[in-house]
Length: 271
Image 1: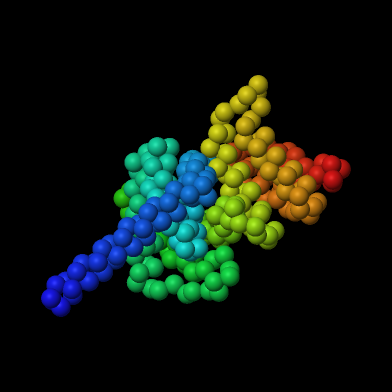
Image 2 (image 1 turned 180 degrees about the vertical axis):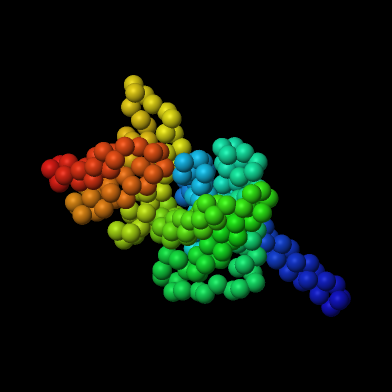
């Protein structure tokens, strides 16, 4: 009799464990498909389709590394960015992205990254691993053809640019993930998020309505909102930052930088 009771108890215990595991899986799936994550996937998809002069496309890899650094589930994000790069730039760029990501992940597993304070945005320092992986892959491509000093410099610059935007996006992704939370974001976080959105909108640089650029309209709108909500200093800083980055990406005239910077005066008058 006691044996039967023990068997029934074990059966109930196994059922409870299985039910808890199923509930955990449902919670994880629900978290992956939350509104914040979906917005991050969409923004990251379009940002991954943007490049500097059609040669350097660091944004997809930088966002992926920033998500890993902040403890954000990045599996779907990795696939989304890879799909965007494959769609926009072709198989060669996708293979470069894939190889760089694998070396980046291998570097993290081999050399354990330094953990920072949990209250900071960049919880784990992954910048060095990202820079090394990006630079190695870019330099490695030179051995498949003629070796040029120009290609060596481009490879190093690509690693530096990817590292810089990784630092920026480490602040940006937390703003997107904290949309539902009643939290006051720092100036760096707000400006970084606006820059990320402007880069994502740059994917529509060729789209115009009545000869008006969609990218310029939304980017200037971001600057105006920032200046209106956070003051003239934030408006001017974000205007210059967004104007410089978009000017390099889209090869626009220098006067566009002045237009973004002067938007802060409009913010002051409105306020």
